[in-house]
Image (cartoon, rainbow, N blue to C red):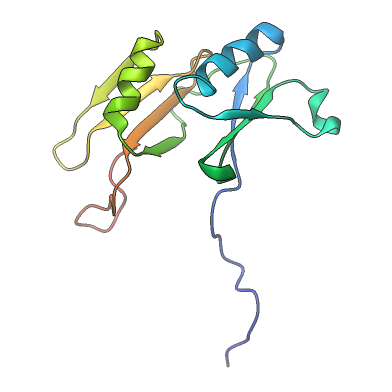
Length: 144
């Protein structure tokens, strides 16, 4: 018997949250990276959350959201990371480099080229070329 109505399945990410240190200097550094080469715009946090510090960014018409929350003591994410699909990844890599951010290229035998850049706090960010389907022959997503 089938039931009509909600199926209880995931449909998309609402946002990705990364940690950052506290303070206005850290927020300015976040804006210089996420609002600079990554091209996201800073959006206001709801008042009840703004008091905690941190900052929010969004792009792609609001469908791509990155929240940076203050974490004390702060530790950057070195292994766990978001991977952003980029239309024109090599152009964005050049933009990041021109802005002073080191970018690392990783090639594997069975997957696409992956690029990694650290945000100003040391959080690892992956950049991959947007494409039709990044699945390998086993049906799994390649990379990461």
